[in-house]
Image (cartoon, rainbow, N blue to C red; front, side, top):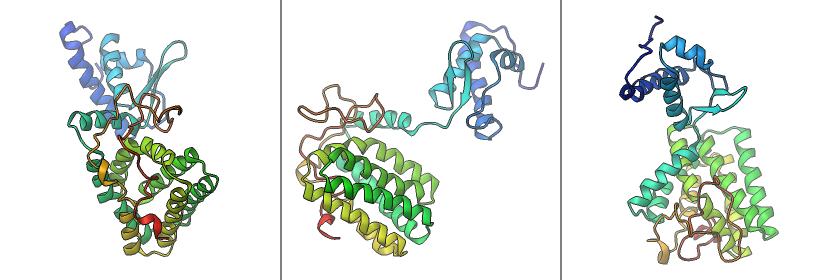
Length: 288
């Protein structure tokens, strides 16, 4: 037997447990880099022989890894497993369900985001590259053009890009991934807020994005943190207790409007009970 092999004949009751063990072994190889992102897994024949297990047990192990987003399995001729990077949108769905079951409000979610993202903006101001500034500038410019043409859909897309650029480029992997997870839950609100805002509010928000880019480029971490902290404080008082409605079969972008395709197709837009201002556009919008 090869190292790590297991008996190939097991009672049916042990298939699931053995599958979990095999999944753990393969998972270790993936996270260590032995099986690189984008690489193909060995064939079923090779894996069953290497581990000394039945095909049913191997397939149970592969199902576990696929559910964790570590592999993608292509069925049929020429198929097989490919190593993948876990998709945050899959994690956000479980996270959203847990929040909704606890009757969590959007104000609670926004408070968590405000504790993290302004600090990431400050870190980015302290240490950034020309490429970081260019990425922020491009998103801010896209927001300005969308606001000037009064195109809420394009503005929402630009707002999403701007927030993502901050959290992805700030340099702390843990906080960046956590912040991205939170942003996954509010992207549909960017769309809703943009549709419910006047052109003037969209333009003020775009100016605020541009101001943050200027502060980051200048290396002014204190001002960048303060500006973005104020900018993100946009939950209006009358709706601060709205509950997260991430999974709601009745939600939509609004009467007569197409559903916002800003998250994965399986998600429903999280529609607040009252109108909201433009994405990150309250209070700080008048300051540019």
